[in-house]
Length: 556
Image 1 (tube, rainbow, N blue to C red):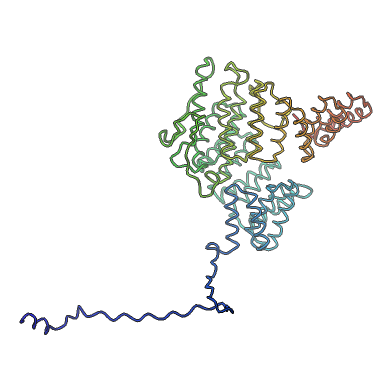
Image 2 (cartoon, rainbow, N blue to C red; image 1 turned 90 degrees about the vertical axis):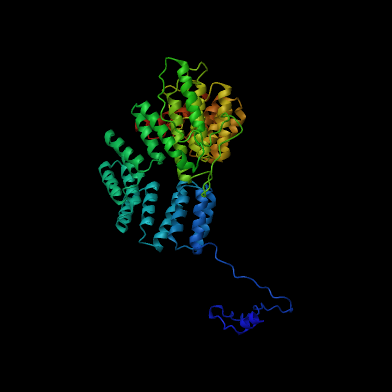
């Protein structure tokens, strides 16, 4: 009882004061009614949020650039066209749209595409006359389009661009490349120096400057600039490719091969965005098989094996053979396209294609099989890697097609894959023709409508004996591309072999304005058909063209 009395009379502890009573929650205001006349329940709709954290025009431009990086360039152009209609004063949208239009993404034609792109750039200049990027774009488009007074207009716009922004390195670079194409070496060199001052970290500037020094036969300076380029950006594939091609042209085959291999190693992970995966396993294995074959042949030059291309030989390497079902695993980039940006993928694909062409050109048929020397398996692996890296690289598919023709003919030694001489590359064996047809079909699936691949497919069909299919393909190609003298020449040759000389002459005459060989072949076909007057006129026209310097193109 005494303890109970003490507890009741104990003074209160201020540190343990009773908590304040909870406030009564306010009654929520009724949501605004949307005026439902029927007395039904109100529709409480939220206000829609803006798409993305930026302004609508910025979001549209960002979405279009992501589509372009992912490889959907046509979709990006459509989105940019819509954005340009909605926001005509946005210079960023206009510049991106003009660049895609100039590249003839939608197939409107090269000349029409340049005219339309220049019109877009000029409208951007009206809305933003002091934009250095717009001035540089207009200058570049003027230089590409050509014509009377185009060079003067381009120089004035280049000067305007660097005047608006003296630190705009891209304008100095483009101006220097333009002057180099015009043969003004001293001015181009000075502009490259200005570009290096504006931005000393641009690897592309050192590479382009090195090519200028190669043109001027200053090879020591060119090598120093190539070395600077790869030191500034080791993953810059165009620098490795240009350096290797330069050494190849100078006859330094061993050095060119080492540069190709170093370039493949340096650009692999940067282009594909791969972490911990052996993206170059196929290339490495084919190179090792190539070296083993060279050792087994005996008497040939033994290739010097460089440092292992794979940084970690045990991480992510596919243990199956090259023809196995399992493939390497890679982490896809956020930009899409199977890895890095499309520009890096295309640059790496071009590097691999150039290396493969180099292997085909220097290979010799010493394996005992006709034309299938020990370099061809490595070349096929490199071509496959090139087209897998960038499937829309039509040049890689075309070069692969030509390589298969050279391998089947056994004429790799001393040959080359440059130019567009399809007519001389018809294979002698049906196996080679079937390989060529497979390459052309796969390339057309990745690059629909490409005129060179369509021409290659027609020649493969002709080699396999399908003259009707080849004729159909060549006639369609001549209709779709009237200025393609190579297609006209091939069609004329096919018709001449079928004995249709009048139709052959007509086909040859389609390309005579662009090709002296077409004109000569038309005269010969007219002579065979008995039309002497027509043949004489064509021979006289061809003689006049030849005596004037043969300004027309060359086929084959």
